[in-house]
Length: 262
Figure 1 (cartoon, rainbow, N blue to C red):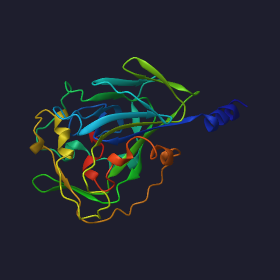
Figure 2: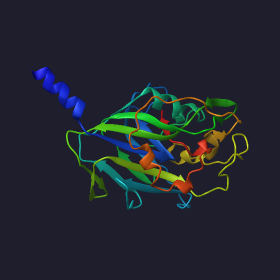
Figure 3: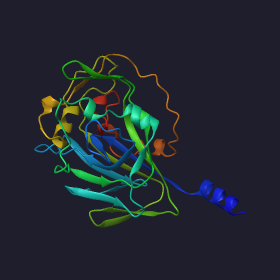
Figure 4: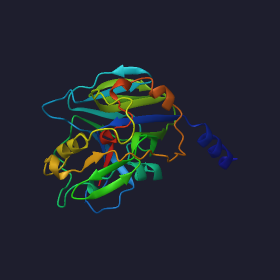
């Protein structure tokens, strides 16, 4: 009877989905560049320093937009992480350690524009960019499909759970969107291979020891469509795509993807 009760509880536990989009780096439990990471402790929204309009933090909770003060810390009223990296996250979220110059490390003193302390749960890719990407730095470092949106699936004992944004508390029952997106570039509607290369991905240098954009790979679209199919559950994805700042997302721009360290 005890085993049956446990099984029923596991089947009926509420699931909350936390979505991430834009220039956000997921940090591992270990910082060494050559370490093998399967767990993440926090997500850092890149600070674009002198031009905060270039990538702007944005939070939506169950369809309601919430303010994000500069240098905000976002926490959750559940057991802390680390979150576990699933195969789709590992495959489609670029590793900064693989697309940066030799000797570059994560700068632990740089907290970025906003900081998310991750709860436990599973990190997955929820949506792919329609175009493949090439990461170039003294030759090709990476080529393939890239996550356009990631998610953390969290099983909760009960809902709502509490979200704290710099002390302000909000209830979360179903889904949350955390994004750090850029202004429209005029490339909406273009096809793969017909998009100019820009330096948005290099803004991740703000989180690195050198802080030199030239030490981070540039991203170009080679013209190949991404035909990979995801086999993950994203219950609220359609709803999430109706909110946030969808006009600020260029569907083919994988240069504005999430990243992970190492």
